[in-house]
Image (cartoon, rainbow, N blue to C red; front, side, top):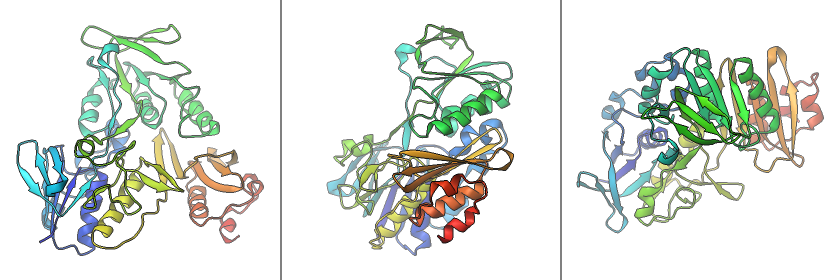
Length: 403
């Protein structure tokens, strides 16, 4: 009987094993996770869960009984020591060996941490990546506490929003010239800067961290502009690194992620990869798409291809972020954009339309779900309306789908 082993029990791993069963795979399936809980959603960790608005069980992607009911062996609290591709086997950290016919790596990513030499190992310094991180942070988020958020990407901004709503005094520093500089246009940065400042967050751009200070527990921060802050806790949101260590020591090709072909195979024909740890082909570029949507779609494509589907994976990127009462939805990828056209709607709704030459490539929609869906359909359909129509308040946006 064929045996598929999946290492990494996150969104991608859970999606892969569920797809195998729903597509009729009747062999043995083992899903291995390092954490003590079943696969769960990560985005709410820095939002509803941290706010105390979501119970742990609601995070679970599927009820714990799903795995047993579908004859999927779920091994939690389990770490893998090495892969032996020549033997088609893995060795767990406890020394146990496990043979496979196909192996899927859905190992995800890990947060970048501050070096110990600049205070990264002080208590009260947190990252936001897994359930244990959120559980450690939540009790510290008390009204009146002084929080420093390091990094103005989506994770940092989401943590800042939760903290501000809970009554903390929040300062956010971003070393780049503006928040969201790596992922969004200046227009989107401007929108979220204004949103956070309206909620009392002190945003400082072009300012980095020199070091955190304290005796055991963090009590202060020194910034690159010479400022010294008194703080009670810090959240580090300076990006993530693909978890490729296991692949690397096993001789599998990596390059800012586990390198896969268009079908999800790695350099070993019996080893596949999906999710944050894996690259995919987007318009001829090998990139990693750090999103729930990609984790699901790429993992499901791998499952189909393990079963002989022979279907190339074509990404359809989409992302989201919740901050205060604003829901940001993103369709497409803005890589190489040249112009951004702004459409303003009712009650503060707004959308930013990215063009590369005369081609629409991405949309950022703030509290504008209707235009997000229209933009997503336009991008996926290869349609690029005249930007003058986008910015004209009189335009019937839905009619653009028929052009």
